[in-house]
Image (cartoon, rainbow, N blue to C red; front, side, top):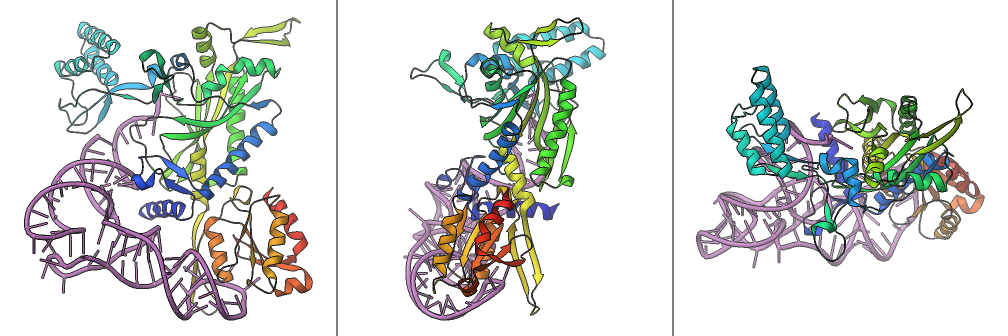
Length: 486
RNA sequence: GCGGAAGUAGCUCAAUUGGUAGAGCGAUAGCCUUCCAAGCUAUAGGUCGCGAGUUCGAGACUCGUCUUCCGCUCCA
């Protein structure tokens, strides 16, 4: 474990040193749990996003994309349950340092009262709690806890902090006049942008159930503690797809996407043994089935993607609060020859964290290698074995020396290739050193132009992962790399 | 949020018991021309995380603060 943690520190350091990830506003000491993507990071992130987008939309004729705004009508979050469930009064026990949700703490005490047969006290306590919660009376809640001598299960004391509100949604004002009525939230998930557009897309795209709507975009959560590098950030990017199905078929589709999504991660190049399912036992208010796909990060197996069967909770809620019907007319004929008719579709959601997937790719790619050279001395390298199809740069073009016309040949090759993929040109320093630099940023292929190139139009291609070199025709370089990255 | 550890150049680290910051690597420019980093020359780069305090004098001591890592907690 200690080694693995060290490895994580090295991965973080490597990300910064080679232009993948920088702490946000670092010259001002940074901002807690906010990070910027650097010149190589942005490219990798974009490639991962594009790979997801293409596999969702281009390869599924019944899935289309949208790009909803981050700002949404405040009632959206009332409907989704975020306003009621996403902000909870909390209290800490000073002795055990354990934190409780105030309602959970009081409710568990009420249960004890019930077991002791004190029904009236139980009822009075819960009633008092509900009244205080409704008024947001935090001082009253603390007094209620103290008056009832509710103890921490760990320390057994009543030494409590004040009750504090943790709202996980960021808010801001719409319009220049500040006021309660203008308060809007930064979306804590992208899903709601899809739900509120369900009918727009269905009608204008003439979509037939089952169909999906995909979206990538930023979401914001004011986490109490956000840590572990880019694993849990306050601003993060989601890649979500909501799949609308006929009620009663949701488990079938849930299982379909559960399988499909795991396959997708493997197709990206993530080793199967580093992935696993984790079924949710405790389900969220909107779900009737939920599973996580977890990846073994340097700090353990953690959630990478969630697949949720969200029932018709969201559409039903939006229908109720917006007073607009969000139903679908199904023309499929029943046994009696009549159409199925109107219903609110059920939803199966796949939701993957792009930043987490980025960290996954970096984690699985990072390697420190050592070996013995022919003369017996040790050699080593740090290499990012990023799958070629998502690597920031695909090909480095390196003239062996920077004269005798070799740079000119190299630049011609670069001009030919850069229309098709990202290339990197470098003529400084020894060839070995340049290979090491390309290893460090994860460039899968290097081509070296030497004097022989001028005689027979061949070049050396060097493969990052194996360090094997081959002699190929200069004219074949572009096609070979194109083939390897597709 | 609580507890532990850390913060000196891009990186890894130095700086005798407090006496106004050094090295290696890296980077840049030039030389050399060599298919797996570490040849030669030169150059750039640090108000020692930030702010106070103690002191004649603080990178070092004290307090506060910010950031990061670890554990707990949180993650509808």
